[in-house]
Length: 319
Image (cartoon, rainbow, N blue to C red; front, top):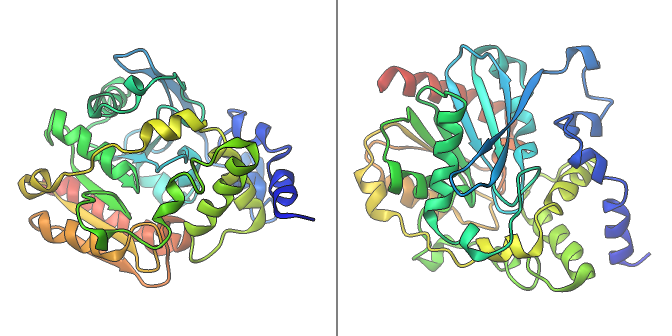
């Protein structure tokens, strides 16, 4: 069987898993490890409308009275990416956890036109709309990969007053230095994620997803990831591309707790970008994962969840 046929088989039949709002399909995908349905973490789905009319799908897990964590995913991903955090029993008991499908992704609206994706203000407004619409009290923002730009857009527009802290996870904070880019960063372009045609689009997405992990997901998990990646259309991916990511001056001015998490085997964004972020933000803490690639929260979830919980407690106590 050729590689395209194999990739097509992985996609077929997965639409219901990603589109149906019985979030999150990851737990179903590896049923032998999943708890019984009655024991699965409950969640609350809700749509929030941004000022430009884009409807954003949000999903709330955990303790509604607990300290808030707002998870922002990466390029072509979805709220589903955070399955190993949102469904973690320890985190759920203590924290109010909210994940967004960013505009153009997952179950959120996917309007056409660069005006919906190029300006930093639209991303800032999205984050603010979720914080205010859900009544999140001083959340910790968790920004993975491309969401580092979204965090930067929010901080540029609205500052830090509404936040308790920020966790940058293998995140874009500045792209001015070639040393920040990993050997597979080109997969975000025309050779993979922006490849033309159905065959190139599917095959490119598979290649990019593989590059996101040093510790590869189980086949069923990878299938679910591939399904929700395919929900981000070509025009959305193109709209996200080419946006500036020069937040150095903003980082220097931050005066709130910051944790920088990074996998040392990341082939998309190299470790120097994490070192830069941690060195630029006053008092930031750097946590490197020697065994992980671009997705340490998935590859080493026990350690990541422990460090995230510790950070959120400290951030809430500090601000």
